[in-house]
Image (cartoon, rainbow, N blue to C red; front, side, top):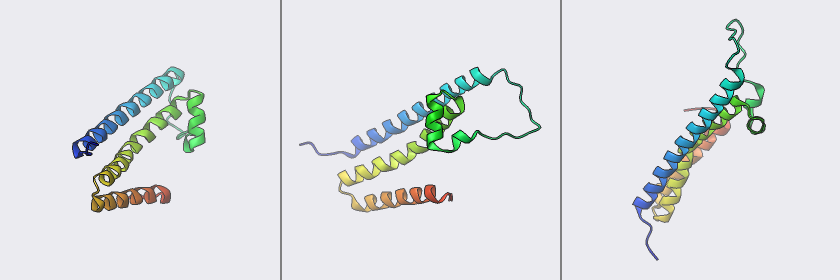
Length: 126
């Protein structure tokens, strides 16, 4: 059985980051095209602030918006994927450290993940 190498994990992490960014960029671009196709001829009214639609504030709303091909929901999904990409990278780093049996860095990486998830759940940022 071949031994797991640090360069293998670095290649996987690099691949995850590239694919995550390219995929999120593509999703945002497609959502933007759909939004412009449906709303490109509309005249902007700068006297009232409308904000973002209510369906974009929740996961079920975003999923429903994607199914119904709403541009703003697709853009929101791409942004969420872009934000999730470095978090996924940290998860794979933790897996790599476990496979390398480097428990100090495994602990540090898990602590970073705990801080990220606590921040996400509490709604407070650094």
